[in-house]
Image (cartoon, rainbow, N blue to C red; front, side, top):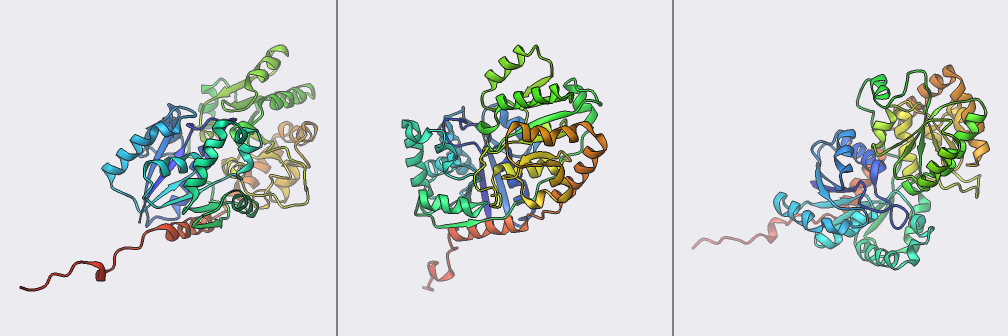
Length: 401
């Protein structure tokens, strides 16, 4: 079976529409490939200049690149058609975001489609995009693209939300967490020195459930609290974080009393220099007793833990398989308020021995996730939409003269 994967690494516009698949989709793809070796995989990365960086960071030098500027993913439609014309029609086009699904539906509507969506459909609707004209267009396109598609999500809550919002799926299934792939071995100190970080400095990395929900302004407030408490650290903010301009103005107003790097590098590169991560999720404090759902944030936390970077996160994001007892004691906050996150960060940033112990336990817990269930769920989706091969009874008979 031959599968063509479409991953949007930056052609979507965070804040005004669906999020790109990005690093979370790339980690899930790598886990899937590792457990489906009998399947032929081809991958197209869609985006701008960041596609090359993402491919290199995730060891995907063989990936095809389709250029599309942010917010204009449909400009990649002619290029996708050319790829399929040159390489042949795949058995299934597997999409890793809402935008790539719409692209596949528009470019090659006759090819069977499957999609793994890492967020609930309300993720971008919550910020008002659905009520904008562009949001309504995206919603209409997505509804048409989902008809007849095999959909895979990561949580039962997400499955229910997609069923309530859209209909007409060929199938919809819930998959367990994919296995986080180990980082390619590099010299950690060399990577840190390349950006001016000394071995004795602690680096705190901001992670977000989506790019738009990685709030740079709150992160600056958090760094200010840590600095005031006598716990100096270097902050790293991804370029796609929200409120970035305001955060940098706040930093300048505080006379730059702590160091902050704003980076466009993919997550694997950032994990090579980070010591600790912090993830706020959607800052929801509702229903604290409910088990945390799996989302793209869970995939990013799993990748960080596999790389030995423990992530401080609220209970609403702390999946038990990634937070065994000692890691949970050190890293799981009651909620995403700044004082609560700072309360958890202060000990782990101040005590090297605690950090090393938690890092080892977190890495071991992430490595124990096998990813077989995730691969099986995706394969079931492919089987649902894949065209059955023609039987010999359908072949034309040649009769003797």
